Image (tube, rainbow, N blue to C red; front, side, top):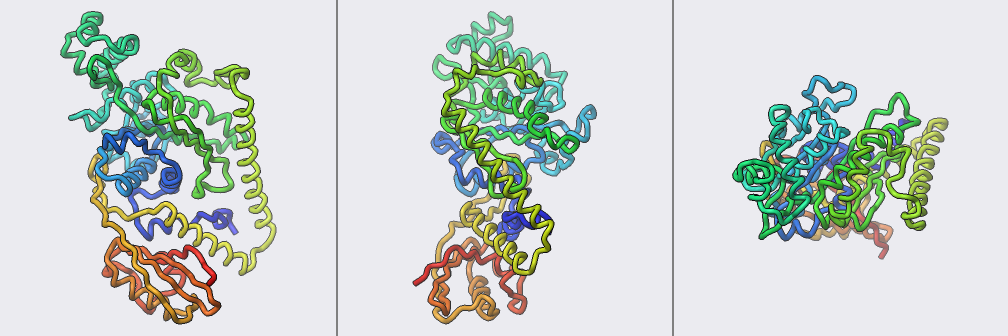
Length: 476
């Protein structure tokens, strides 16, 4: 049996597609959605201000954005969300095809939101590109500034003026726009226009940068030719992602806590983990280190140097990092050993059925835990503002007669009951079995009865599983 067939979460994507069919569903979509449901990644300030700006680094083909859109529209109402994303520019002839994502289905229709930096390559490992991406992200959320227009080369003088304004503001947050105009020799009105592009606005007598509330980074480099050096090859890119993200984030979002998390929908056999960071202390704590970080940006110099001396890092923190690495290493080895054992032993029918049942249970549990709802979105909308979904309600439906999961007639009864429910209704079933157990099952009606593709003659336990979600067994 192929290792892909042994993945317990292998049916999650299929199940999500059958139940809700979200926009641009990929494995990355499910991984982000799982992280969003597990951790409180949406700051409380977003709920108060009803505004949110997010930046997505190395984002192509765009599944994280689509997943975040579905999460926001399903769980939060009235949020004015603006986003910017960066990746290697697939339309720049100087970029190698081997280094780029060829899937531009999403990017093509949202191109105004994609930022490719000062030289239009989209190379995040270039410092000037990094700073241009940060400035574009911070400029979002202002009135009449809903899109991101990239103007390479011809717009370089404008970028230089913006950099000069930002430098003055960083030196003195209380400096007036008139003083900036006088020192730079630029007309006062131009200062006001460029300050908005730079992502700064004046509140009372203080310049305040616009707030980027969430940054995601999912970049990687093809390690097919050197699979034994994956960390060594990808770490320079990860370093650039971290430095860029730290500069872009606003205070109060990240990092009082750092969680190393491997979603269930991430393949067990690989070494992929996500760092979910919460409670950022603000850019002021980072500002003094930027010159040092810049010297190693886009290079491999940092791999031979340490940003902080070992004496400054608490011993218990280092031990936590070691324990974390050992934990995920042991789990990965267990999966690899199981796959090797399965390769040398022919799987019998019992083992195959056991794996199938496990995959179905995991996919059902994913739907229940993440509470994924079906949204009718408008793909052409630049900010993916979705139509509101119906509020779900719960009904109880009891079968007092004996129940056998292999008897088709009971599935026909369940099916007939589902077709009478309106779209968006969550139905709770209490099914009593002959051995005195009570099976609690949930069925979510995501389609009108007219759209159901089954007939009563074709109902079977496997096909109906897309709607029935067994959650628990309680012995009376």
